[in-house]
Length: 583
Image 1 (cartoon, rainbow, N blue to C red):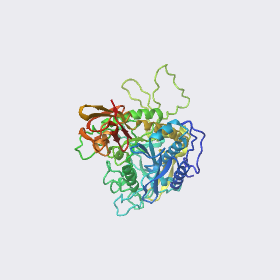
Image 2: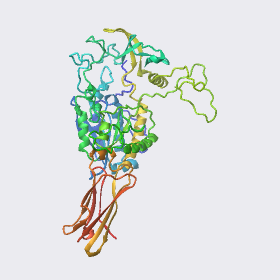
Image 3: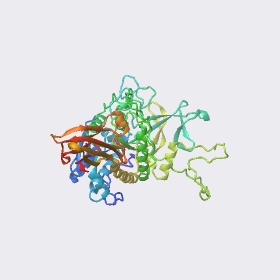
Image 4: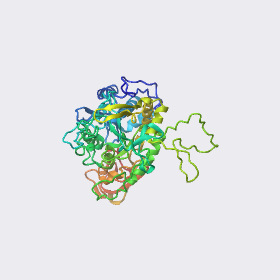
């Protein structure tokens, strides 16, 4: 039977949700590209007062990449925006549904939930629910294969032929899984705690390898390597400029060679109102402190730092604390951000970029108790040890009990949650080139897609987090604007620019890269007035969050204070203007 435990054929309508309380939510299943396009069109049509479709670009296969703009009222100068991006990697097709659920909840909840109204009245929200539309479409193909690549392929084995040994369903079960080949030179052995799982042999412990592992496929070129030369190699979320890996087939021929990567970069550059990006993918900087790359003070260096600048990292840590209070997840993120959209967005474009990995197959399921074994009583107040850790002996002694590997821990979760279909039992197979082998292992997407009930719950929690982001965005205010009469027709004009939001006007990365336009403070005078001291226009880069302020002073001659104006303009942090109050 084809393994499609997460795929539904029609829209699922759930009972009224509790987050936000006033919103009647409908949750979509996994959607094909055509179904996603129809959903975007339908939402924009039904909620036309708030929602409009925006074009982003086209994929290599010609599929349109589209998004939504959710906006209350008219677009105004400097109004900050949040961009929610999902579907950056093909196997994370389910994140597109999550983003669509959130967009629908915002549109339908406006006027019913005060938090949603407050957010949309002050902030524009963009949604791009699926970036790598080609690789995501592989989720609905037969046979089922966990497809990461959607771009140009190369001759991986350097034999003069390209794509001659792609992954393939050779046993005809509708899935492309794993082949394990008995070989004394192999590096894998059965996990001692669960023979279904494999771990690498440790020679220091006297272990000798038993198996070689390959993706299911053929060895048509007889080079003793299986499924090593796929038709496609380049992955969209490895094709962005920051840290792009030259000569890596998965990174593409050059940075932004993949059309979705270029289109997303151009969308960001054209929409200067975007102040913060929330991404759903393999990257994360909310569950743990992001990797740091120094203080960012050396602007003379041509390349940006390899990691979050220290000053920005401190703010990400605080936002992460707030995230973890709302979203309870123990997902494991991809640590290597080179060539990713998230790294480019933060370190080269200079935007605040919050990254959530969402869900991965858990590793924390307690080990099952042995038959007849009772749970030992614990003295009151004593902490319980983690179940997957062996019992400790005397001080300095190591337990002889083997520790479960990651895959064995994942299998515990499958067993405990009745998700056995995510793992295909190993079965003997006579391979045309390799002879006697076994085929099985984790099914495609099994480690990446949450069960439907968990996905819906995660979507609600992520929406709760999204609703808090508007109050974090920098917003400029003129908190003081006065004019004081001096002798001889002179006026002293003072103004104070303040940012009461949590985030500063510009991130340290943005200041280092000079990639975001600073605020511009202007003094507007009538034609017959003279500016004797102070600058008519000043650029403001550094304005801290949580009450950061900057004071300005001008000397003006021959002007009525009521004809003077002070104005603060930004692309992404609001717009403020005032007429001086005469003291």
